[in-house]
Image 1: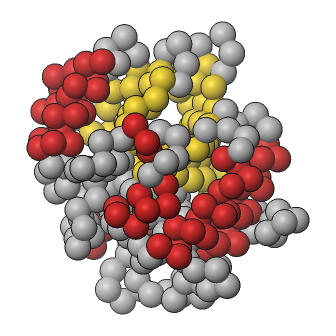
Image 2 (image 1 turned 30 degrees about the vertical axis):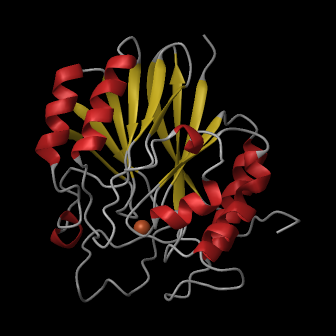
Length: 270
Ligand SMILES: [Fe+2]
């Protein structure tokens, strides 16, 4: 059986054209470098961006995001997902007609599912509750998840959601996790076909489990937070490399590998 490779980028925090983040990081350049690496890699079948697509949720930032992603979107499926820095209406203003987004039920959230291959499906959740850093899954979203997992009952499901639901190693970020973890757990236990959960939000690579389901937290393409994040070091730049993950399904088995970002790479047209 042929393998399927899904690249996961996260916390891209794109800003307006010719701008940088308040910590000095050129997040737009970082995403351009990631896009370039993925195009050059040639063996990536699809790409997931797991939330915090832009920094302030402004329409101009989503415009720049679309510009940066354009070279990739023409080559392979790109699955977009929202995080706490995103603003749903502004995102939809630029991406409502975009493949996969156009099948999402936009009245309460941007959630959709995709069959990846014979064995696996990807289910994308929207944990954004605007005005809060922590994540929340409303009843509508949980009902949709329940029905979607039933629809994919013959598949192993890769569940993508911005906010983790595990102990991420520091109290500052643990307070910003998914709030209603027990509601999610109840749905997952009913179906038992979720094979892995992919998250972002923490700006570090973390592997743990939610009950019996392995959880993989993806690093940010823009910058890393220190593992011991607290009020005194939150504004300090961490030396750890930004990066992304590549999840590979071969013969129905999933493995994940981290790639560091080569920030010197960029598209000639960028
Ligand atoms: Fe983020």
